Every structure is written in C-alpha cells, then in structure tokens.
Image 1 (cartoon, rainbow, N blue to C red):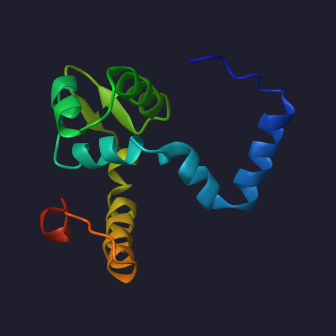
Image 2: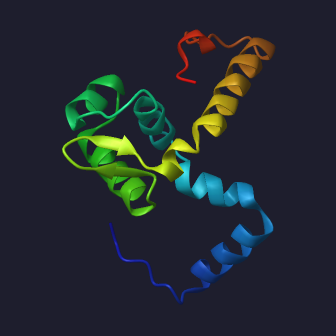
Length: 123
C-alpha cells in the first residue's frame, strides 16, 4: 500500500464528503468486493488466515492480505494468532445483517438468484 499524502486535495475533498454523507464513510471502511465477506466470515468467531482464504471463494492471497491489513488499520479486526472482530467490527453486525436482508429482497424483485438465505446468518 502506498502512503497517503494527507494534505492533498483528494484527501481534503474526501473529508468534506465524509462530513456531508456518513454512508460514504461506511463504504470507505467496509466497501468493496472482499471486506464485507471477510467481516461476515468473522461474525461467527475468530478464524485463521487459511480458514478465511478457504471460506471466501475467488479471493486472491494478495487481496486477502491487503484487505486484512486495511481492516486492521481501521481497527475493525485484530490479529493475534487468529483474526477476530474488534468491538468496532462487532458493532457492524446489524449493518451487515441489513445488507444481507436488502440483497435477498432486491434479488427477488430483480429475478436474480441468490443461493444464500438469512437462515444461517450469524445474528
């Protein structure tokens, strides 16, 4: 990861957007293809790196390592021997649940097959 120039125009604009739209802050912290899957997998408890890699089909080692580091930097997960959610990460449980509910409902409305249901969602 490259170091962010804190005084750049992009960073200043980012801060303005964060103040104006809290959803942007959330998507910056947990957005993307892989971060929600990583957090979802940790909702059921601590996991080793290899467990996360096996539980998230399609993620490359590079992306998993990068996103784990970002989630650690953002203090949403911590690593001892295993990866686990911090209190801040755990507080995302209702957010992730709401996202899952939305996906299932939206997939019904748009004729998209989603193989998952909320039956096994870790509440």
